[in-house]
Image 1 (tube, rainbow, N blue to C red):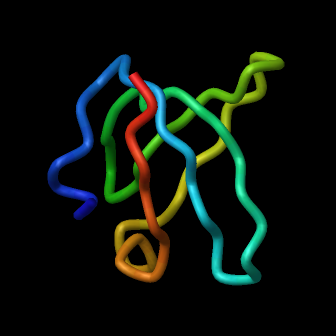
Image 2 (image 1 turned 180 degrees about the vertical axis):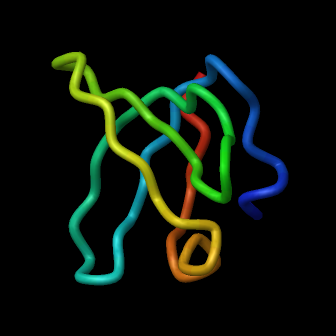
Length: 60
């Protein structure tokens, strides 16, 4: 799935550059960053300039 297809409040499995995976909810895009919240409530972001190197799999 392409990053421009991400939908707010939907849950995705994110595959990072090192092969690790994390399930998180996409919470929005602001100032060149894509924001997510994991199941424990921790918020993190991925820069727009590197988002194309990640893989997203929609879970819901």
